Image 1 (cartoon, rainbow over the protein chains, first blue to last red):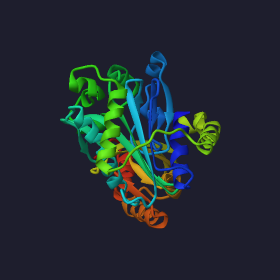
Image 2: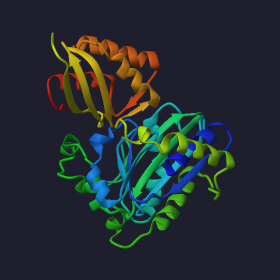
Image 3: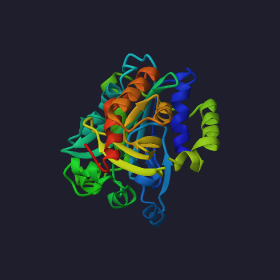
Length: 239
Length: 101
């Protein structure tokens, strides 16, 4: 249901049925494909089977990511026209809406920097990737942060094209990514990182976040999206 | 009569994102093309329109460029990480048989 909720929230925010929202969430072992990616080209299905990794597709572009319980996902949905972000330039959306995460990570002691187009990096290694869209009357930005993820599984389940690795002068996807845990050299939980990102968002944008739950409308939309789209192999695998 | 041929290329755009082309052609015309990759394109549902528009187009730079330009003008689509000309270069890379950047 996670991908369904991810789409239901910006739809509700855009229609004015829900407030501007920041969502934090987890997945168990999952490859999440960008909406334009080919599952057959990007995913090592044998490795997925061996590691109990499922494959789903999100509604935004960008590249495939690997999620597990050591990964923290965040998503920001703003009603279109919000003064915080331009609503025509996705690059500026990524830059502006990554600021809170960067600030939160830096407050933990991680030397995080936004790296265009859509990454947060530490000394050239990717710590977080973002994706987003401008649709349904909303500006939407989501990112996944490698807190204590299993990079060995990540390296197995994703088929990163050689042309991408060559551009970064590395031999494997494992060598181009890092985790918050590895950067700090100590155990850190996704809850710790979430708390610092809440702080980073509040301080970057001069806002106060209030905890809440999904509205009935969002839950209903998510259920419908799950039944008609996100539970279907036609959506997840057949591109 | 010439049979259909399958062509493919992985093209790394200067903007940083990857275009992966899988196409079938007959007599230097596109029968069908699948464009995938880690780029961004808004609106997202415009990509199938581009793939459809490319059908029966000659595998020649001038014709491909005209078609891709028409797509971006006609749909007001915005790409990030790839430029309109990268779609042309990626398809031509498939024609010449391999990766490109």
